[in-house]
Image 1 (tube, rainbow, N blue to C red):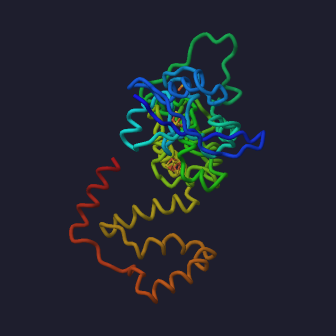
Image 2: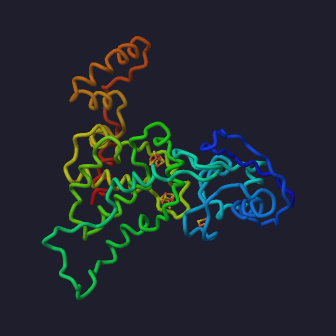
Image 3: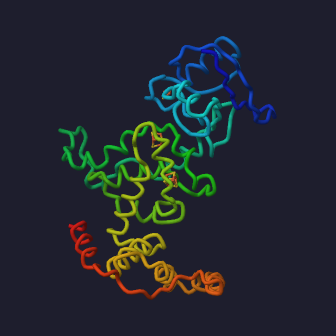
Length: 318
Ligand code: SF4
Ligand code: SF4
Ligand code: FES
């Protein structure tokens, strides 16, 4: 089939800004986006720049934005893209400086991964003497718990897709937080509390908006957003309840338990009453909403069969 592919090209080192260049090429029907790029590079324009290695969705090198979505070029069929979007456009991953064409400087991603110390740490006194006589055995349940996060191939597709990373450079991002959960969930690690405390700050697990983009972008089913939710749960269980995020969860549960549904008038009050500064900052908005009849009443009775909701919640908690 004869196709058209638009490639975003740039060379910042030589002052060439980003622009789209269109190539027309004859390709076999089931060709991948990566093989199309390789064909163009070999046969049409040797200066087209991109990363690749395995061509088999293993090494994580070829991630890029294809028709706006971040993913692996070697795992994406041209035909599927044309069928879905009617065109084929490739761009470099987002949130990292472009080095040339589709190759980005990965340092911002690696800085985040490094920041979570993604390796198991034991207390010095428990370090086994060398040579180690035998391996450390783990039970299967512990392995299953961190299995998804162990599948990460560091392709950066999730980081590129992340909506918070779009607006907040302090956010550690999905892959780094998934790595953090990998070690928090590892029974051999002895820094769990320290790790959870560090990630309880700005840029950590509470800054995720749960948009799910990372889950959709990930080619290896790591499900970074789920790992972030697990980190939040671990943090609350570890007594780290001093954040707006954890208060939101605990108050949400309390309200549903007492009234059988969310009370949208009471919820914001619960969130700001313990923080006078926040209370003052939202007061003008609350007055404005009240004037326009948009402030829901914080007082309403529980739903008729609230006991059933409590029974379900108790069952779920067991
Ligand atoms: S779910 Fe969270 S980490 Fe994942 S892309 Fe959205 S904001 Fe980023
Ligand atoms: S979590 Fe998935 S998308 Fe993100 S870097 Fe790892 S493999 Fe790639
Ligand atoms: S080339 Fe290795 S993942 Fe695509």
